Length: 155
Image 1 (spheres, helix red, strand yellow):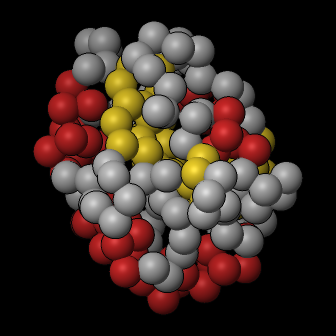
Image 2 (tube, rainbow, N blue to C red):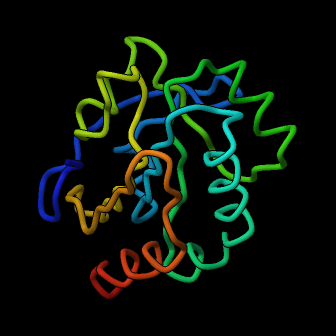
Image 3 (spheres, rainbow, N blue to C red):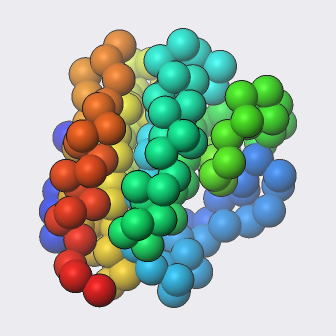
């Protein structure tokens, strides 16, 4: 089960789809972050989830939350996926050491070698403000994101 509300969010540094290093601690300087773990780039459900989130960036902006995707795919795969689909948010590669960040967030499925469909909203204080996940093969609802964002402390 993904990290629960109140747990400290493990800091990490991963490369985004352009190869730039991104550290959670640096992102949190600007405000809360929503980490959206997905199993694999180019898969049907992952693509539809990210397309819906990309089309809903206003929801995250409304709460001053930075949306960040995380998957175990390589940087090159993520860049091709983001360019093909027009995703307008960073997608981080948890490729090597394989799934270390996903594991740190209890969002790694050993059986498949991929991240679970898990979302962790990290408050500016570095603690989990909300988290949720869906069963394998099931997309998360936009309503679940809305509820998670409402769990953030008032600015």
